[in-house]
Length: 288
Image (cartoon, rainbow, N blue to C red; front, top):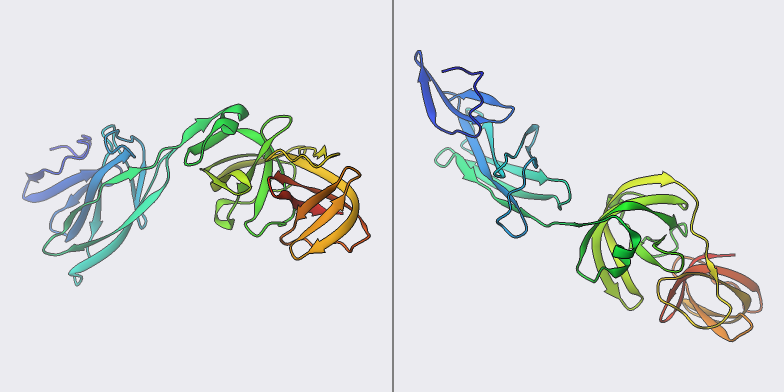
């Protein structure tokens, strides 16, 4: 027996010179079987349940391993001598996939537990047109930087806007846990395409990068026609205020402006609004 030989995830028991060794986990090495142990093992695959994910990181507390070519992993944990039961959180992450976790309980009577994971996949988007063509339910990993306009927390759902082509863009809903976006950032991100009454948007799971750059410029809206997901600027006199909406007369008719965290201007005042066009009006990101 040579401890220098990598036997992968071999869980056979070996005896050498009166010492008994059991199980090999990558980066952990052989462990003395005389020490009480819990063994957590399993396979990590893509969402189809069949395609193994190689190189995924599986962590249990401070112990972590990476999956092999077949997606398998084994974590061996030392069990406190006075503990008959141990409950652990197994966390797994892999590039271009959702992270996942599971709680597992091992006992002295059943110290080895099997925990398999099937991780949801993301489709890589490396040009803006592909994002524009994505449909609700698609999981996207946008690797091309898109310029962002941030209305300083104007929306209840923390939406920001990214430009995907000279005319249109996408609304991103960015929870605090996913990261932050500043106006002018060129961002890449992972998330799920969804749709509501204001059109398609991406619910962001993670902002993967944000680099300083120029913010997208809004298009001047000189009529009342609203194309969904266009960043527009409209200006004129405020002719009506009704709860969370107000109306601007831009010279060609009234444009409805929807506000959430922004403050409505007074009737009769002149206002300049930058926001995202939707079928119900302009969702205000900035009011001057």
